Length: 242
Image (cartoon, rainbow, N blue to C red; front, side):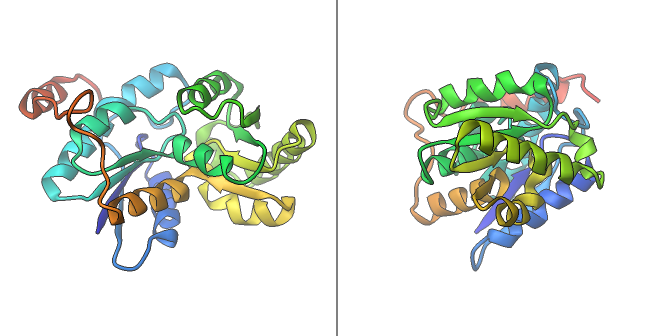
């Protein structure tokens, strides 16, 4: 089984971190390749960033289909391009926000999300409604660290403090980390906080693997039927992004 984990931003160090976390939970016989687009934003922190990332994500799906990948993970908490990617792919495509929030909903009465910047809180809230888990999401908290700042030594301290405040204020049973750049922190945060801390990269990787093992994929008889692949690839080639 071959899985492609797509980091929608172009920061290579984050792609490497995401790939390592995904490979750590992949089952026997599963090959995980982590990739990022050759063009697009270095970090995704706004609606504009997310929109600009979508062509690169769809290019990665298109090349993955040619290479014969069995399934895909979109490793950005906004799940940019998820529905379009599901149209293009033969196998299942799972976004990390959906996987993380659905996983957290199994673990208690409710969960809190700890994300990066305050400006992303509304987007995360919209996703809870889109995925049908709004009643389980008891709060969304920003640690006010930009995405690329997550790689600094002081980031862990700020994220831990935001998690503690979320648990105290929300009475939640689990924490969802609201950025793929936090993927490597979930186990140590779980130990310190005494609750499950869910990273969407690992949750989505295991979810895609499970769907493939069950021979399940996106329905292709209606909304998610394959679009005209030649037309899509031609339009992507014309998109003037750098």
